[in-house]
Image (cartoon, rainbow, N blue to C red; front, side, top):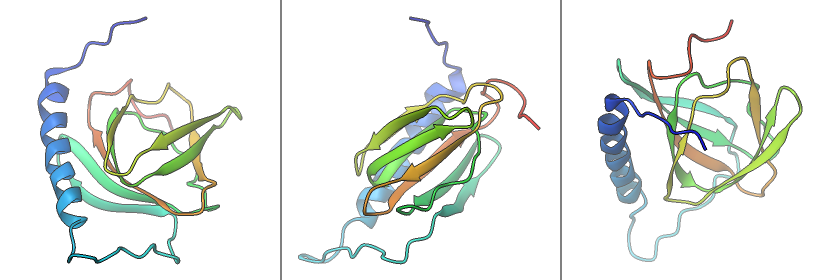
Length: 146
């Protein structure tokens, strides 16, 4: 097992951002007593920018059933907060597949992608998966690939 050195900005910024976003998720999930959220039957796969500064880039991703995210990569580590959980099949450009299950209301940490590797995300479940992504800037594996 290889030890990972976490930069000071990660130790300070990530817990603060995750705490604020987790509180926002809890507050946004609170409605009137007995009120149930209706699933969005017309969900479309895509990203919606939420916030960006010199330290982080934040977006909401929706991965609708059978509407995969196009091939992409993450050059920096990121925290994922599941607004609506589910299981995604992550397919690398080399054809390797792995499943990632996110529980609604939980936060997860993902390291930067290996240099040069692309992946796409596929939701084979019946409901959209919705996550907030908080991607750190300037602490990844190196410069972006062309």
